[in-house]
Image 1 (cartoon, rainbow, N blue to C red):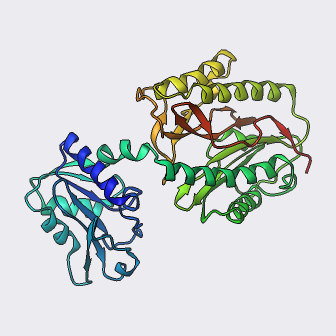
Image 2 (cartoon, one colour; image 1 turned 30 degrees about the vertical axis):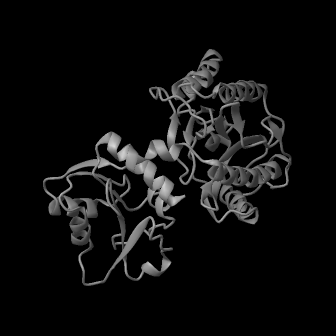
Image 3 (cartoon, rainbow, N blue to C red; image 1 turned 135 degrees about the vertical axis):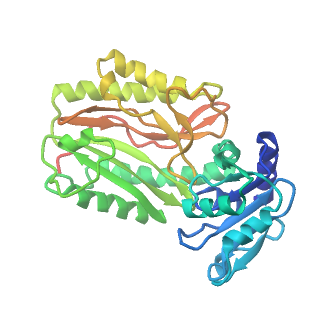
Length: 363
């Protein structure tokens, strides 16, 4: 698999005019090599020429963690008294059209710029993002398994099996994370719990607020399982919802379902966003839908493609992304519904099946 991905990356490098790709922190490196660099002050970098053998420059104390792939890359451990920037610059040689990881630390980029003053610099994502965005069958299977695990946690939330009333948001957040791990996740990336007025803050950080009876609770959680991410949002109400909230939720549920149905291959990403936005606009809530409709997902929680106005990229088979419109009335309440969807030649395939209707929980 690694050599196939390297071949595709090299073809893309030729298309965009990049001589050497330099990969450090971020998902591109493990996607190509199987090795995830620790975010250390010590430099790790894959030096990938368009027409030569790749070399993984890695701290010597980290080298035992690298599963060597001589068919794909060589490993160059560096010792504590060596200069890894100089090693990378030496491997780059006379090449001058360079692309570096979007998440590489500035200190290493600045060092390389000093060592290679005649080079032109570009984002590695110009090479890798479009390729990584189209998932292969193994990646889709991994996303499906992660989503199914998150679904089971969401189902417990909707069934009232996760107590809410009288608990602090952060305690519920911790339980969501614990349940994700129990369902097979290796790590928890986030577990947002926003209750009452906090439900109107899309990225609310759960804290000591105690969840009360008679309010909305937005739970948005996900993690990483076998390298691939889950992400799901469901909104519940602790007691009988007022008519105003039921009306808002009905609009949101229709917008989310319609956007999922619109996510067919060949459709521009911005058009899917437009479907959800028009429904919410026409119901009078347009000013309260304050974020994009969705984001790609894979090795990272957020990656290409993005379902947002201005992105005319058409959906392709294998694109994996969230569909998550929300409506937020500041200081009062909010709601969001989110599924992970795969674009396929036979139509959108939602990986989440936890019920989308408004659930009333009494505990």
